[in-house]
Image (cartoon, rainbow, N blue to C red; front, side, top):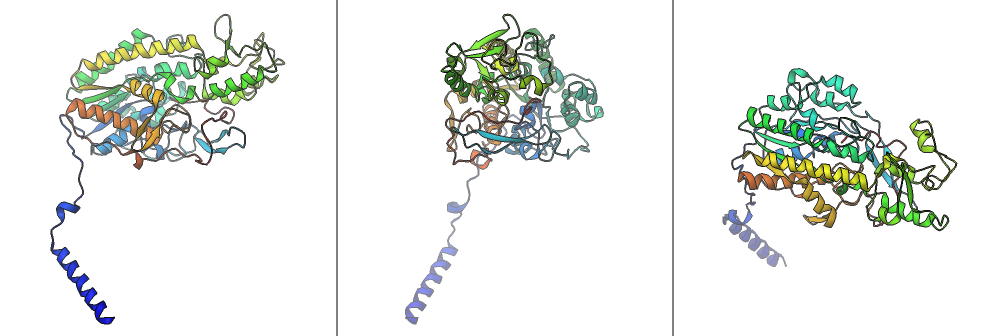
Amino acid sequence: MKKIFLVLMIGLISLSIFNGCEDRTELTAPVEPAFTTGSADFTRVVSIGNSLTAGFQSNALFESAQKYSFGSLIAKQTRSANYVQPLISDPGYGGKINLTGFSNTTPPRPMFSYSPAQGGTPLLLTHAAPYNNLGVPGAILYDVMDTTDFATKSVMRANPFFQLVLRNPALGKSIFEQAKNLAPTFLLVWIGNNDVLGYATSGGTRGTDATGKLPSNDAVFGFLYNQMVTRIATELPNTKAVFGNIPNVTSVPYFKAVGPSVAVEIKKAQAVYPTLPGLVYAKTDAPYVGVATVEALASFQTLLTLTSSTYASYLGQPTGKYYVDKGLAIPAGVDTTKPFGFDPTNPFPNEFVLDPDEMTIANNAVTAFNNTISTLVSANTNFALFDANAYMTQLSATGLTIDGIGFGSSFITGGVFSYDGVHLSDQGNAIVANQIINVINTKFSAAIPRINLSTIPGMKFSKKIQLDNLGLPIFPVGALDNLYL
């Protein structure tokens, strides 16, 4: 046995020596993905935008999400120099939404907690230059060129992010000036969403036009966008840029998480109230009361905001809790002894409902604004367009499988959006980054490798829960009231 063992050992040693002498480099060397910047220069990447650009997620701006902002991911893929962001330690600013579990009801309901509005600490306030990520949550198109003092604007708009992101007028008196002062070689610009989305998420009760009741005027939007594009072209003539357009409001789960569940409850209630035509809700203009049928709610012909979930559980009850929670006087003509949302004298609140007329206003604004963006961007050979609207519409309609992972626009389980139903998740940002990289590669003859989505964290939820038919999400009262877009 010893002789046999010795022979085997000698044979194995000989084989290893022989293999060690063989040149196997061509068999073992890792294959590096092709990389070239083409006609683009990514030495200094700078982003201009709102919360979508900032990396805002689950109703807050916080460090562990900011590092997955699409601008940061693109800067990494393009091997750009330092891409500095206005980092805020977790849980950040805004009031982060945390998924805490699911109820024992059938179907199960997701339950959330709500972090303090200023639970984090800004980490890079002393950074000596403007940040590369100049996405300001809450910013509208007007804000890109506006030189109003940042501290004053933060107070006027009840929005701390103008001061947190822009900090010091010595760095530049506007978002654009700070971007320009960084001498960017490549710009990522995604702005204008809030000029219509703010109207939609408020149920059509607030807007960005001169009256504050409708989306921004088409002519005003065109003037402001043309001003921005022209100044980029003339003052940064060698800078390449990708501009994103505005996704349709109906493509986000903020408008799709609650309606079908309410439709089920209304249908049950009709057995008790045979004359109940549907959800009775308040309207801004005459006749001041509208009705959303079961079919309209189930098929998204009438949309309910995610914020409506707080009060949807009170449907049919003789209550005025909404007015009490908001600190509002009971409006004339409202009788809170009547069943809430079932009676025209105690209607479901206007701010939670985007009805067909309001949807038409919002959709028309998106179409008009996107036509303006397309026309202005296509006129400059240094600029390229990321058609976010078309991509998000496709995602909402059919879903997508990427890197073996299924994605869609469903609340929580879709994987693209965070827990506020509007802002992108880590993987959602990576999806957007990859689409922008595709645009860069096509427009500027580059070969920038795409991001493998399996390397990016997904949203956290219990896979043991059947999520095909979620009930109404349970938010703390007041959660999402200050949603920064």
